Length: 193
Image (cartoon, rainbow, N blue to C red; front, side, top):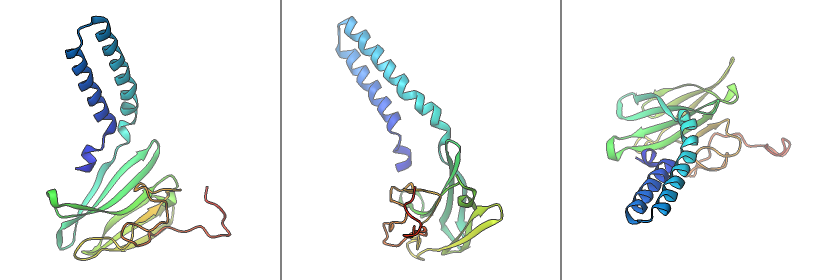
């Protein structure tokens, strides 16, 4: 439901249209009315251009697989792009309908082929298998899930330089208090760019 309601530009345009409609009903001066309509149309066009240009970069569900012997638990992979870089978001959905809970499983930015998501699958009813990399350099990541709640033991993040899509700086503890599988920069490596 939150994803369906997360369209601030669309809701802003709807609010602008409602405000314009209210002004046109309440204002009787034709000069002021035409000024309001022209201004609203220009604002609407300016706001609509980025929406139309970026509409193709949304997420698309490319996998939705039920866990073995657990039909109420699904591994969901969404694929999208940041202009030209492929990105993947991996979630575990527990339950269905209004009681469905989505838990973050991993984020992958395919800007570098070593950070790309190659495969996502179940390794058991309470364990997920993620394969990252490419060009002969793949890494296998097993992530355990709590058997009752479906909470992942860690959240993987590959290729995000400073912040993962959840808003946390890369390498900080997740909301569950566990550390993600993110390599930390050592003192000899210097500052991250």
